[in-house]
Image (cartoon, rainbow, N blue to C red; front, top):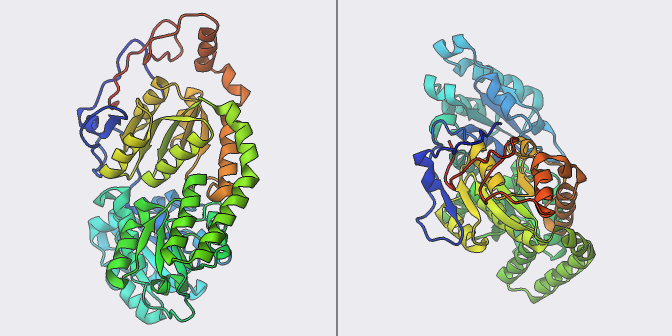
Length: 486
């Protein structure tokens, strides 16, 4: 990545509405639109969105009907953990070739399903359509219906052609496919004090941590959708009394459909950070109106916070006043990260998401400090520009954002699909703070040009004007607008 000095990064006019600043009046942030051509968005496609939602259902067969590249791109994309079956860790593809495009791929898909179902004996199968399938017009639904009748298991098409919209549309396609399983299982044995956990994907064992808290309160967790998920649990999840939606971007559609069809109420919660995890436990206990359950929740919070707080306080002394940038998939995660960073003394100066809506961005503008940049569906150059302009010490994002941070000489924390450290729950807050502290306070950043210049200014050299960026050539500042970058 190269940022030219001595010239202004020009604004793509169509990106201006997708960027706002906290503390300043302005129109609602433009969002929910397809990415601007030429901006090389950080957002993924519809197919990718559907895969990240359904992939963690561990005992199901996942077949990508399309070119091999689509399956390779999304193989192990969540890195989700399973307490049992590992079938989901395999990425199967029909590997469509040129002749399949000409003559159609339905027969190839049918043969693939026959071979895979016979060999692996899955509880269900999901078949993902890709861009090329949408173009050639294969009747995937008919093939799935025939396979389901032949093998006696649900074979579910996922309408996930990549070009149909945004990653958020992929979430919706996944929810619609999963909904076809709901209501087909026996709900006997489901307690009146029961919940489903929606939108936690057990990337590093978070589902197990959160499930333990609720079970200690006396609440039955019927299904985890979809982290460490099971087909049979999904079939009977309509028997639960409440749905808790952790990842609002991916699972709000399913929770609304479950309310429409089965009358199950839902609450949007977050399991990241002390405040949000505590609130999730308290609100759930209050929903059931059980004082004993509420007392147990208070005891859990007291015990867990007492265990981690002394170390958090020690790290806060080092992190006080440091500045962070956040770019994540869903807005609820962004809310939690802003609060979690504040609890360890850090200020969020840049926050963006891939799937937030207008209300989400308005909430971010209200909860963040004045001057914080709020952006929807950003691109690498925008993110680099704002990180330098806001002089951040830490970037929290996913694998696509990591190179941006390291090229700029900024510490990075992975809070997305590829991480291996549990970040949910109270123990997750401790893990998160440990990683933030280690990243921000690493002495390596004292040797990068950006930090070296900051040190010189601290001992008396004149500081550059706010918003100036030196990309390696001292004395040639680059002027930047606070708008979208091309």
